[in-house]
Every structure is written in C-alpha cells, then in structure tokens.
Length: 292
Image 1 (cartoon, helix red, strand yellow):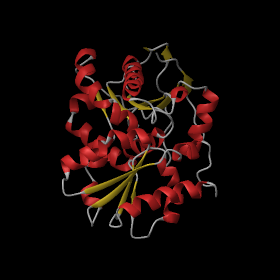
Image 2 (tube, one colour):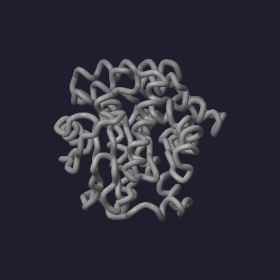
Image 3 (tube, one colour):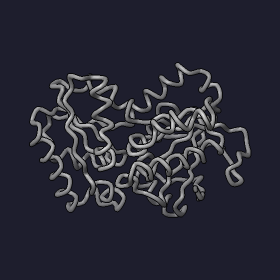
C-alpha cells in the first residue's frame, strides 16, 4: 500500500512550530517501524511522529530501571513535541516501563495525555487464534524475563498455555541484514526446536518482538505447516483504531494531515539506511535529536 508523505512537523529543539498534533510512535530500535507501517495502513489520515532511540539500542538486555528511564525520557520528548498520545511500539519498553509511566508519571506530567503499549493488544487476540489453546512466543530476553505476556494472557485466558522462548540473536540478525542468509538458519531452527520440544501441542506462535516479522519467511522454513505465525502489527493497528473511536477526547486533539516524520538519536544516515530495510522503501523527513 502506498503511504502518503505530507507536510508535517517542524521543530526548533523540542518546541512545536506548526499546527500538526501527531500520534507519537516510540521504539528503542528499528523494529517499531513494522508497527508504524501497519498503523499507517489502517489509519493513514493521522499525522505521525516516530522516535527511535537508536543510539542506545538494544533495550532487550538492559535492566528494568534503565529501560524505564530511557523510555520515560523518550515519551517526555514526544510530549514536548506536541503528541497527546504515544504508542510504545517496543515489547521491551511495554514490558518494563509502560505500567510505571501510566500509573506514576502521567498523573504528574499531564493526566490528559496517554501512553499505550503493544503487549495488551496482542494478548487480547490469542484465544481466537489457537485451536489447541497451546501458544508459543518468541521474544527478546528482556521481554521473556519480564513475563509480561505470560501474566497478561493468564489474566485474560487462564485456560491458554503459553510457552516462551528468548531469542537473543534474532535482533542482531535483522539489524545486520543477515536474516535471510544461510547463516541465520542455525539460530532460527535452534529456538524453534527448543520451543516445540517443550510443548508439541503448540499451534500458534506469537512474534513478541517488532523485529521478528522480517524473519517470518525464515521461521516458516522450519515450522510445521499446521502452526500459524502471528505478528503484532495488524492487531495493534486494529486496537488503536478502536481506542480512538472509543476516546473522542483524544481523537479530536489529533490532526489528520497524513504526514509522517522521523526522529532518531543515531545519525540520520544510519537511521535512513536501517529504516529502508524495515519499510522496503526510502525514508525522508528524518532528524537527529539528543535525549537525556
């Protein structure tokens, strides 16, 4: 689907200089671009501001305190840039920082603003995906150790069995553009074999990291055809659409010019190179920022 590239937001530091009031999309790295892509397909009319904390990635192996601090800083940056709604398009940030930001920081910063994650929207659909009610999930070590999916799914669907597998090498495979190489076979097959050995009844696998959709074809090479792979993007986009419908007080504050701008803590050249890998097209309107 061809996505619009409209006029958008111009900044002097963190001060908003025009009338655009975008939805903020945050990720610690580049995988959140897969979430942004699906959101823009479902909701192309809105303005978007994507912030990648690419200079401090990866978050997946960092402590809860560090992930929370980095995520809070980035959310505050997007708030200062004019975003009334921020989506944490990062499983690690959603797992380790979202609840604290929602419960402790938002009442102090601005109770009228919202920060949403991507774990709850993903968990809400799992019962409908699986026939056997045995589901596997691949994720970063940080997401798996947090047990966020395990707890969320147990709360929503206590009859569902979830088996988790941390895949520490999968993000580097993607970011080094090795995800389709023969060398990736070992690392992908290893984790699939481990997961299925622990529960042969699994019929659905969640990709619990936003990088992993790029590995879909490679994963399918080693999965039985009876097992379904479920990436997060479309479900997150669907739930965001529903959220905005149910919250006109938020929707009414957002401008709808169809623009999309990108901020990165890395170099513009590096971000543009990596973003084109994830989005399969050149990326414009990129600006480097400093977050602290």
